[in-house]
Amino acid sequence: MTYAVVLVTAPSAEEAGRIGRALVDEHLAACANVVPAVASTYRWQGRVEEAGEALIILKTRQDLLGRLTERVKALHSYTVPEVIALPILGGNPDYLRWIDESVSAGEARRA
Image (cartoon, rainbow, N blue to C red; front, side):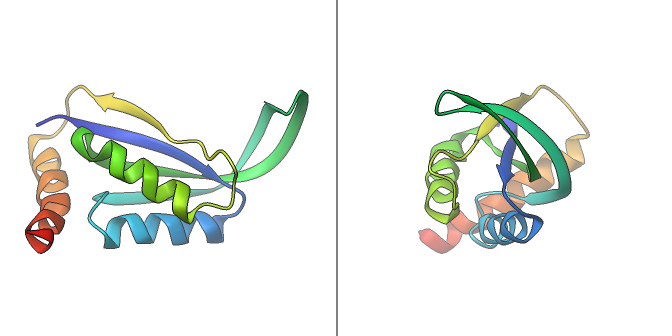
């Protein structure tokens, strides 16, 4: 099994919390950490912008990334939400097993 950390920014901690909760409730992520205040500088529509945002750090399986991305897009207020997945190359085997068990419960419900 391969795992990923997924980074998503949102315009507020409230929206980030709502998105994170939905992804965990729907078994698309095992965990959602919300970092409530990050300073973002980015290019958007030809201009450099600065904004305060919240960061969601999600832990999931790589095979769920497509569905997770589509769900973030449906829940998010941004036109083009950030969804960036980084592979987990290793870690505590017990924690990785917990990720798998947490998201696998949703597969049992869908079957």
